[in-house]
Length: 174
Image (cartoon, rainbow, N blue to C red; front, side):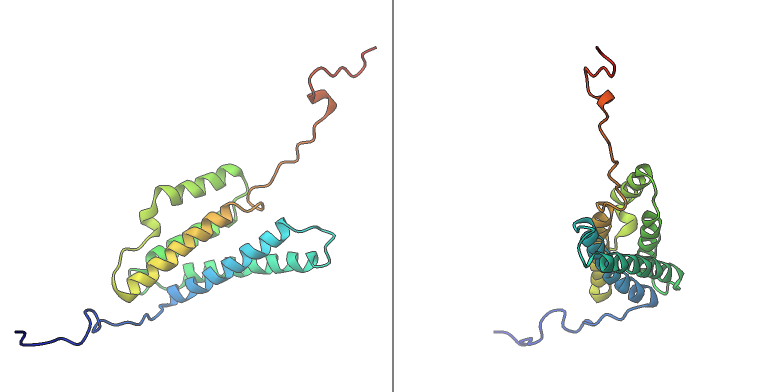
């Protein structure tokens, strides 16, 4: 026969709330701004320039990227008050650098850094803080992959097939 019968579930006495630090608060806003910028950029990629809303999409995308880079700077510049802020700042710094990539080689290098060093862009804490930081970093890596797939960082080279490039073409054959 049991002497006691616990009625409180295991772990109920742990704090269930998460309080943002300055870095994590800015990072949370960064994720939202990044999602909006990605969506606006996709509207441009799949839209026609003759569409009446195209000018609006261009402006929305430009404002989205400005907001994203501004929030990257805010995350980087905010003081790290706890250990979990460090991977958030590291990720924001890397994202900011990636958005400035001008060549395919730079973009590949940026992707390889994230793929090869997941430990730098992850967090293994426990409790509400650790779980929330882990969720934000996972979502950030997903969005990073989406950014790397955008046409703005992967411009399609306009290869115009010239008649000379075709085999068997002789321009002045009689």
